[in-house]
Image (cartoon, rainbow, N blue to C red; front, side, top):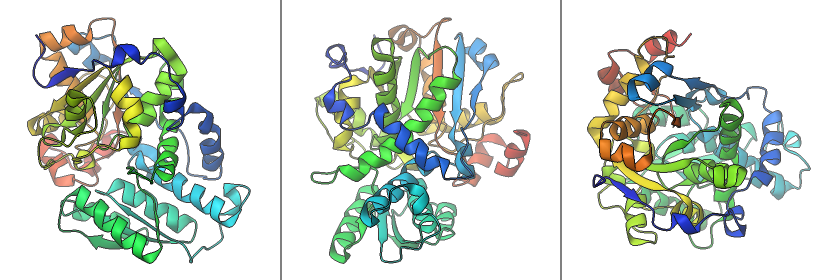
Length: 394
C-alpha cells in the first residue's frame, strides 16, 4: 500500500500521445526560436548536468543526475529562460522587429512590464525589461525574502509589496496593470490570458533539451517540483513529445501546505491546495495551478507527491556536503525539493516498489534555484555559507 503522500494519476494510461492540445501549450517546434534569442546573449551557455554516483549507490539506484539551473546566466535560477524570452518576444511583435538582435541596444521606455512573483520570475522579468530598455513593476507577496527583493531592485524594477500570498500578488498585479495599460508577463494563466505564459514555458524547454542531450542514456524517472506548473509542464511536455512512449516515469513534487497539484489530481480537475501555502519553498508556494498546464500535467504525469518542511534541510545538506567524489551543488529550498522527494521515496519501501526505483533506475532532478535568496536557511541546514559552498564547487 502506497503512503498517503504519494498518489497515482489514474488518467495517465489514456494519455499516450502528445497531441494538438499539448503542443498548443508547449512544443519542441518552438525551441529554435528560443535558441535564436539566446544566441544574442553573450552570457548564455548550457548549465551543467551533474552525476552523483556515490549517492546513487547509497540509494540503490543506477544513476542520479542533477541539472544545475543555479548557474543559468549567472542568474541563479531557471526563471531567467522564461521571463527574459517572454519580454523579448512581446516587444519584438509590438515594434515589428525581425529578430531579437534588433531589440538589444534600443530603449523602449513606452513599455511597462509587470508581474507577480515570489522572487525569481520577477527578477527575470526585470532583467528582460532592463536589457530591452523598458520599465518593470514587480508585485511581491509578503513572504518574499529581502535578498530576493534587493536582487530585483538591482535590475531596475519598481517593487510593490502585497500584504498577502502569491495569489494575492497576482490579483493586485492584474488589477493595477489592466488599469494602467501595462503588459503582464506572468508564468501562470487565467481565462483569456494564455499566450504570454506559453512564451514563458517555451523558454524553459531549453533546459529540458540540454538535459536530454547531456544525460547519455535517457532517464527512467524524473522528479519535478511544481508551483503553478510552468516549469514542470515545459520539461515533462518536452520529454513526452521527444521520447513518446519511451518517456520517463514522472513525479510531481509539492510542499504539503501548497499541494494544489496533488489535490487537482485527486479530484480530476484543477483544485485549490489543502493548506495555506506557508512554506520555506517560496518558489512553490502556490495555492492554485495554472489551468493552461492541465492538459500536460493533469493528463500525462504518472505520480504526484508531497514533501514536508523538515525534508528540506537534509536535501540541501546532501547536495552541498556530498559523499565521495560527488560534486557540490548549492540549492535553495525550492531547488532541492526534487532531492528531498527522492530521499523520501527511497526511504519508503512501498513507495520504491510502486515507482520501480531499483538498481536500473536513472533519476533526473532539477536544481531550479541556488540559495542566494535564503542564505540563513542554507547555512543552518549545511553549516556552510553560500559563499563557502560556492567556493567548494570550483
